[in-house]
Length: 116
Image (cartoon, rainbow, N blue to C red; front, side, top):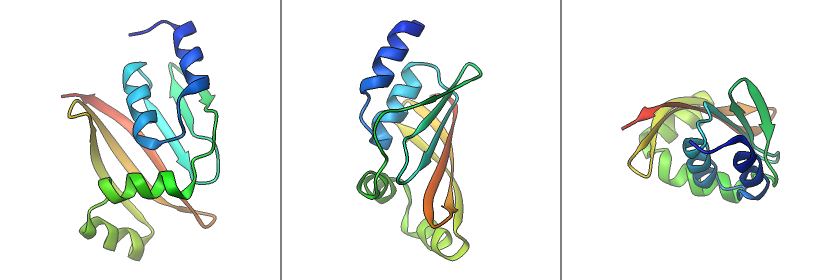
């Protein structure tokens, strides 16, 4: 695991792409990633919330959703406005994902489960 100074330096430059943020969170031991489309991502690490630079836009959300949310899950997501699933990053890091809508925006919470 990297030190705190390195974490904060990389936090300023990590791109607002969900997959890249998940890789960053995995590398730096973050427990949660909070996404709201149209707003900066927020990372929870060792009891502290950190706001990321850049805005998670619809394009970033759709890139992630097209890979992560299967057609079956998408049916549930559209109908119930909420879905839970697991997601694996780089075939190594597992996350529990809660995706839904809030105030007309796509939202998601990613909780690291473990390394494979």
